[in-house]
Image (tube, rainbow, N blue to C red; front, top):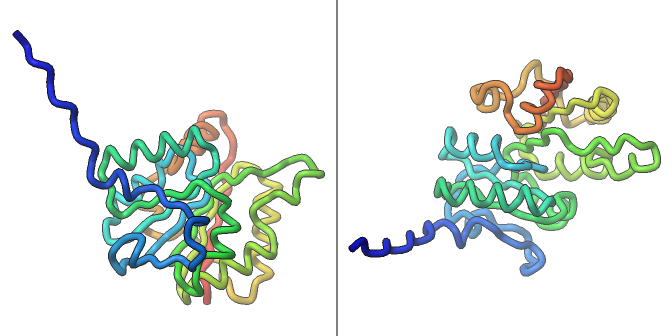
Length: 211
């Protein structure tokens, strides 16, 4: 007779992966969130988590925060993080702008990654775009000297808008190429990039460093 197998226990990391910001009105403390003092990078709009997970695996000495509003993608990403027991990843399902503005201390984020943000192509919706002067001010405030912002989009008009906005900043300098820790992950960094490349869409990238 075959005995029923014991249920596999959930990885120890499972209870630590997701965090919520409105339960704590204090500014974020990375040492409490990750229980170490390693540098923190944030990806905004991580979808299914390909870039976030691959980065966390390749760079165990960096802590990563992934922010995603879509519940279906968030659950999928969380499941993948838990299955791989990635202790250097934390996930937030909330408004990224509010989190950056309200909860992140000055110079506390080593890098921001924003890949394929919603372009809101209709003119009446463009005020909803992530990149605007207010958001940029918060990015600059929360980056230390040498901290980076890299982004990608398949929407050329939005790319040009972002470039103009970032080039106007007196604190950000455009880089000739994306940071090495991103380049080493290869092409097709995200699921969206794989999809768009297969459709023949051009991918537009940019990277800036705080000076």
